Image (cartoon, rainbow over the protein chains, first blue to last red):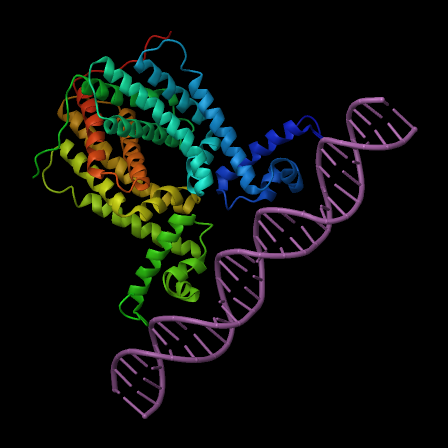
Length: 213
Length: 213
DNA sequence: ACGTAACCTTACTCGCAAGTAAGTAGCCGT
DNA sequence: ACGGCTACTTACTTGCGAGTAAGGTTACGT
């Protein structure tokens, strides 16, 4: 039922089709269990074409990571422009993040569940994107603290940024498994939990462990 | 330099050695890239013994998940006994969790990075343990809210519990990659961020998205 | 029209790792 | 002191999937 017979397409188009297929198959079966034959078949092409255009399985996987990671980072970044308060920046970024994942489920799964567990070269690639996000969040928190003349330790800010990004990822992953969930609502709930906590921290309040039972 | 020549051990002992080796190898190479030969070799035994005792590769992997998951859940649960306030329960649980991961790095990696990405049967097994944790955290949050005569929606509590567990996992994963990090300190920082936020929420305060730029 | 280059295929090779057949050797009860 | 069971081994078979060789076909410039 696809309109045209779609024969003999230019390279750039085929490459995207292959990447689409590869992302889908990698997401479904995982890196190792995914077969080049299936990827080729799902792209509507024969296997040697994949090798001709995107190279070996490793290179293909790396290309998937590059593309999806790029898309994700761009989607988040383009929502954070101009003059915005700290909480609005966090809100817009988080919102863009969760919305993107809801729309690109397979890409998220490849990045989050596959790439991180397939050894150094791949894990590192996604880790570096992730580090940029954590870094950005840390800068945001640090800046907000400084504006309130509070001087938290580096470790505090780093750990909170890590936890915050992790919380976002957990919600993203949950959304990936619940297609009918509302990304906006999830983002709002996390903001509610986190920003109030952070705001309270900025007043100098602290939670301290109970004195041992 | 191991003391005895260690030949002809009873089954129960060998099984544990095999599981130890399997967890290490699965953590290092991932499920598919791990070879039964390497697992056998690292357990100091020949391959057919592994098949005789623990079955096929799938069954072996499932056994690893079962054991590690059991250990983790037990470690957390045994710290939460008797009468404790909500925040102390959360604190003790989180502390036990991060401390456990710091001591059982490989097990954590198998559960968190491998099992979740190797298809339905495995992912489901770890998902169910995880669901129990989220459920427990949700009950804790819900109870604390009720004590303050606040009646949050089910969705709010569920999302926050998910985010909170996710934040804990992110810290755990970070700790797994930084062996010299301090689990206690990480736990305290997360409590600081979260419990203050939650406490503020319980006063009826709310963060609302800015009115659009 | 027709050469040539880009697009695309069928049909292989070949290595690696899962799983097994068949048999050996130490231990323990009687 | 020996039968028999459990622990253990070497040495295979087998299938699957990554990667490729060799060639066919369509478009497009001139």
